[in-house]
Amino acid sequence: MTVRDDGYDDTDGGIADGGIRETIREDAQAAYQAASAETQRMGAYMREQANAIANRQKSGLARGLADAADEIRKTSHGFSEQPNIEDLVSRAAARVEAVSSAVEHKSTAELYEDAENICRRYPVTVATCAVVLGALVSRSLKNSPRTAR
Image (tube, rainbow, N blue to C red; front, side):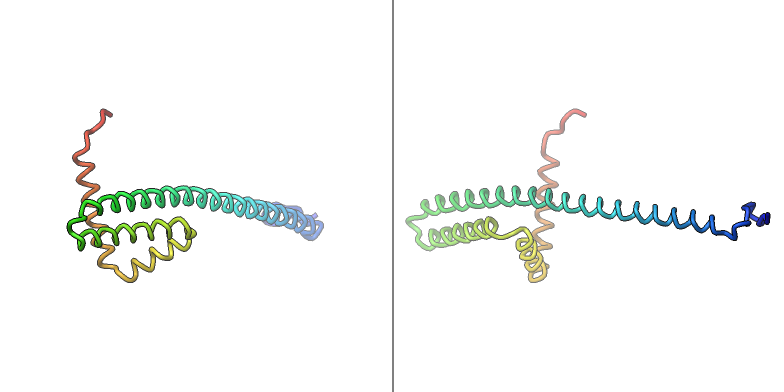
């Protein structure tokens, strides 16, 4: 019996050692494949849930925009003595309604692509709107009553 420096019996020439390594390798590969399959399943489930949430939010946004278009259109009736202003407000209502329809009928991927294109086409306008919106949100949070902690 030959004993190696690491304390293992080397009488079989390392064959048993190779068998253990192969078993461990197979077990590790099976665990990797199982984990990979589970990860793919969880990823598909998460995408499905995210799409469902996005579609609900999209529907709510479309309804909100349609309601806003109706309110704008009602406002335009108050300008019947000023046809230029009435026409301008009516066109604004039509545009808001068109956006509402686009939101309702486009997929979330198409809406994301549209938003990306707008950001690329008008970066200064988007940045300005973001700053103004941030300032408005900050101001409204500052002025809101604080709840007891």
